[in-house]
Length: 453
Image (cartoon, rainbow, N blue to C red):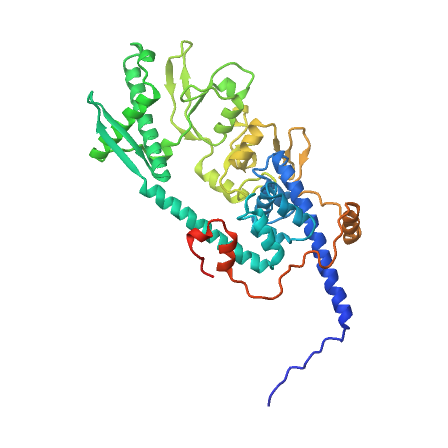
């Protein structure tokens, strides 16, 4: 026995009705692309003027919060908006609805002011799939050109070491970028090691003996650092220390200044650079703390053990509760503990007085005038510098009762005439030969060989 599914026939429609429906879809799509061009113009202006810099770390993060875009899609909108600022032909085609956003998004990955005219022809002549294939081939040629340049740089690497007439050894060379960066980092680490040694010697000798006059120049420090690198490499003993110690930022701040920025006293980094009391408060929110007592002459009387401002067990509970930065719209998981009422002001180090903030928003609260407080119901309320509340969820945008009609009227008022054929490519169904197309279009293609299909 066989079971046959019933055949469902679509209700009959006249060809003219379907054509009319298709034209309406095509026309509205062109209108939406034209509106997208205006949206990208606004995003570019908003980004350039820093309108997003109200506690958000980027324009994409603001878009994700305010408009509801996925963060990846928001980054792509910002990227395309910035690119179109230097590509007026592509921007104009999108604004007239002649190119879809999908085509423009792909073309802006490779387009430059010099190649824009050629790529505009690709967008008008082919489908979105054609454009994507052309762009992939274009990037293939770009990568080959980049590989040739990298190979040339690698072949030109050299280090010349020779002895001058007076016996001094002269070094001259060319290093690949990543090797040069590695060398500069190593020299910086060696210079820091020599600096620390000189400080220890100066402390041991009581700081006497014309140290300022003996301070070597930067080029001399580089030479000494290179000598240290060679010496320690031969001894296999170059050890910059544990990462946790190596990258610590040490700040010395008087208790009075920490509690009240208006008080006089020190607030300086280890090297002597002065920082604001607000910066010291931020650093002291979630850090290791060592309390030292001095007499009136500044002599050290007592030094306490190092303790964590936020104990590890409490930090684990804080991480579990907040699950990342609590600033509205922020999703970063790398955070610092923030005291809602600073411990220097008598605030307790308890779960109810703590909140997680990323580095950017921790700085915003301490040094940029933003405020945060816990309401009686336990929720956090953030306020801007002017005291206005920053909502956790942005207010909904006002939408006309008939948005399609409003879009048509807006474009009519701009003199933009969009119809069903506005965004239609000139493709007639022929096959796409990507290799031939790239050879014709790309300025470097003939010297790099054809790309695979």
